[in-house]
Amino acid sequence: MMVRALIVDDEPLARQRLRTLLKGETDIEVVGECSDGHEAVAAVRELRPDLLFLDVQMPVLDGFGVLEALGPEQLPAVIFVTAYDLYAIRAFEVNALDYLLKPFDRDRFRKALLRAREQIAKATTSNSGEQMGALLEEVQTGRSGRPLERLVIKSGGRVFFLRAEEIDWIEAAGNYLRLHVGSDMHLLRDTMNNLEARLHPDKFLRIHRSTMVNLERVKELQPWFHGDYKVILLDGTELTLSRSYRPKLKNLLGESI
Image 1 (cartoon, rainbow, N blue to C red):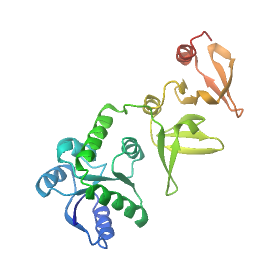
Image 2: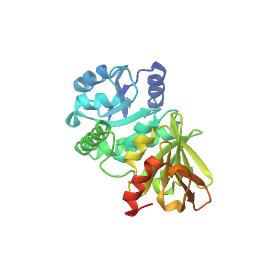
Image 3: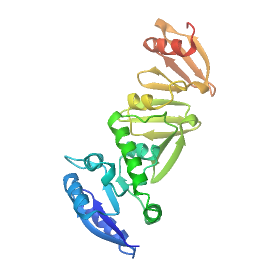
Image 4: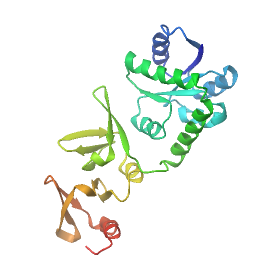
């Protein structure tokens, strides 16, 4: 079965790399390239590809805008190509077909192709449309319909799949968040507000504008100055519960502190 593929990326070098990787795949025919989202929408409607390599970050109309413009009924199998971890996480949460985090190697690319071949061969395009529709809803609302259970962390060319329950505490660091996991620390490009909204509210508590803690790791609370509290974790880490966040803890515990 010949798979018709469309490449969408605003970077010429990125499009060329995908073409190069696809040259050795005898069952893949590249039917076109697009450099922006509007071109992509028109090309999908005209060419009806089986497989779409879709960049996330593009000017004017980004990758998710392309999906929204097409609608689930017109979507081919989609492999995201992105350097932005947050969108990859959302795609992973709703079981989108696959995503490739730049930079990716040939082995990772072939795994994505294998998944695409299997889906296309099983004629599950309608199911793919439902998944992409769920992904669009996720992006538009800014959260999934269920608490976040896993995070995708890109570090040193590697990708880690981190269970939320493994996180001890989280702190803001500029445009990133530091996720403290035992003796390890991972950086995630996200905001505290966004991640707080997506984590389980009964398991993770915001205790400061720049700090969030896994309640399973809390050992003790100690009164501190000016209505603040010390939050002592099982490993001895000491954090501060700001007075302005005390009502959240009170509501959670159902008692006064």
